[in-house]
Amino acid sequence: MSFTSKKKVKFIPTPIFSELKISQYKSQKNKRKWILFVGRLDDNKNPEFAIEGFINSSYFEHGFHLHLFGEGILKLDLIRKYSTFIEKIHFHGNCPNNEVLNYMGSSDALIITSVSEGFPKVAIEANEMGCKVVSPVYNSLQPYRNYLFPIEEYSVQGVSTALEKAFKAPKFSKIPFFEEYEVLKLYEKDYHELS
Image 1 (tube, rainbow, N blue to C red):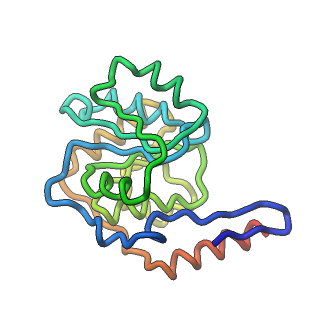
Image 2: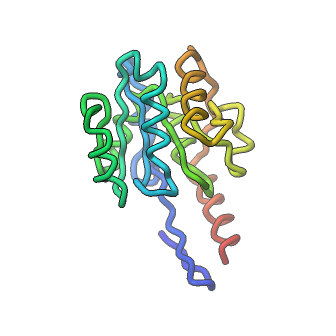
Image 3: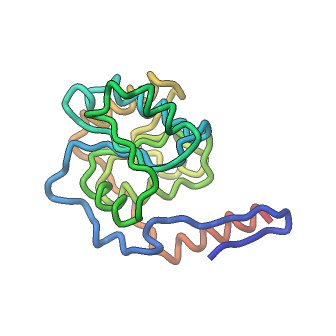
């Protein structure tokens, strides 16, 4: 399903759980030492902050691996730049949703480092799957601030600081889960704002 506004802006809903029931992939009993980044590898999503923040965190020191899912214009440059960390930083490209969900259900945290976000649904999906969500508090996430490990300062140091808080936190609160029909209401709201 996609919508096209009168302003010729195309809005394409992309929640992972529209194709697969998230409950099939819920938090695995045996978490692996994984951190995730899901999104385009471009300037707006700023994957380099996620990578640098990870390298400068206790997650890195304690043998965790960063898995990046997505394609983009920065991918080759990032692979070259971080080739010395090939054992701990993995570029998966675009993958089927079920593969992303399998990683998400087994991961400790998700990092979001976008310059801006409309409504980052992947944050809610990751939280529901048992991942700690490290993210700036975008306006759309303000109601969920208490469920995040917020990146207070938009910098590599800010990402590292938020990752440290997530690393040290034994527990975190889950966002009251959105049913699919509630997410569709959010799409309709987003669509009407674009129209």
